[in-house]
Length: 419
Length: 72
Image (cartoon, rainbow over all chains, first blue to last red; front, side, top):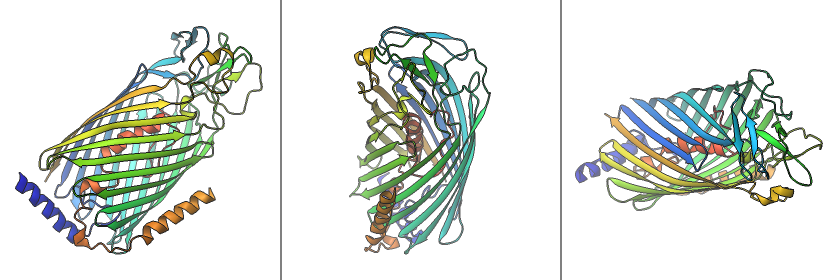
């Protein structure tokens, strides 16, 4: 096995000499295989909230000369409970879902709505070198869940320069989505009334583009910088989220005092993403940073670190840490004053408030034979915000407006290459 | 916005400008390892993108497309 492994490394080195590995695609991916099959299952479990089970299958066919066809099939099963957007208050709160079910939240607790959904998606992509300098990747996407359908396509061109030490990439994509919530789409910032009949379907369109440069700096060091721009138009509101109306002095919410949320119908998102990989004697360090901003007032910083520790020829351990911070959207609010002027837009969805996410964990990979690999990943994730914001009034100051969320992530994977 | 674009241009120039060391094709064996890809495990990358897209207000940066989910 040692001999085989050593031979494999030498063969790979010899091949990359011949192929002249490029900055944009440092690895001679799937070297020596005609077919690659990868399977993985993810379990995402929030404490007392949402659980997602997500198996996926990827099949790749290598046609040689850099041409590759890839199909990806994903299924999601989601169950549990999700925050409605309503705020905790000093009495129990009873809600009726669009499908007529009633549920009650206890005093001081953030209201959660039980839900269950499934989602299936399929992607296909085709990679083809156009000549010695240019390469194209085209892909198409379709997905469907009970109340949401999406189709999309992307295209990316990469160009190698400077003896393939520098690679520029230019990509664009378009997505067309349809939203058809249970009981239709409610009118934003009107009083919640599950008996109302609303318009059935809305649409959303997303156009995005990316310009990037990847550079080989040394035989061990690779860096990349991307600028991304995305424009969303259409129905960008979450139809199931609501906002509490509270007394401006006591902070109390009365029965039925809730409005549907409403977000703007356009959004421009931009980011700068920088990433690097450095190869030590045998280990590899990956670091990335993203600076994101949009015209809803959200700014965020994301740092991601992975260290690939080669324990032996067959086993590697990869610790992973990720740190994320975002500022709140301009129209985010914990609640709205009863009797006050209704703003043009408002949401109490915690994902648009001030938010911190920390993730820590590790993945272990085991190569059982040439071209086969098992992997197992375990991570802990925590999301937190401002539990006692200055905006809290009266009884709201007695309760956590944003209880931290503890999350467990488990992933198992298997891949095999077929010569 | 202008400052960010300026920083991006500066970073890009720095990246290209730093490439003073010519790396010959036969010196790229370490770079050819699959784990030296900037997304070392695309499956994990895809699953993580889906998680963070669903649970945070920011997304994107590494490529085009994505989304297509009613989770955010």
